[in-house]
Length: 260
Image (tube, rainbow, N blue to C red; front, side):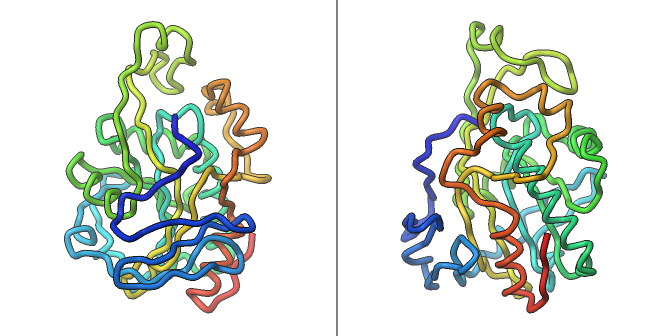
């Protein structure tokens, strides 16, 4: 997605600082934040009831909310299936995290969730087709209607802005991996990964581009990447987050060792 390196949050009193490769928050409303040893920041931020109750759906069309996942630790990243620059690498990294959770025997206690910012295109059928490119069921793709996605991501600070393409821009971009037609718009958004703890509090955050490491992006999505996307695939721009940082935070929050 087209975005500035100046990653930002639209949450009152949330300010991030960059130090030694980790992103830290100075405060989180009613909670304090502290740098996590593996990267990112630990915090303790209550999630409003309307956000926990915002209805989403997965790639099978099944509806759920954060409320329905209470008692489980949840890793959440934002994406959209039409992204040509960042999101395929986000998905590859989230797949790696999902595989690590499954290998650790914690699949019933930890959910790995990628939630769209594009209500207009990301229906259940599109999510299912996208995930089938990875041939891996160990993480969940989700979307929702425009109202619920906005409510959900506005709280977590991933502002999403729809940006129509000009006719000239459409001529110069790769055709959609599924439809074979040019996309008519993009959705600009903050790239981030968060963890919600088993008590339903926002417990950890990292910001920036995903560093997929050895994770593999499916060939169909690799061919769909723009020139900038190919550059991000070869070398992610900083700041960035990776699976190791997420798994380190998960290990601390769950009390169980989880490694890639």
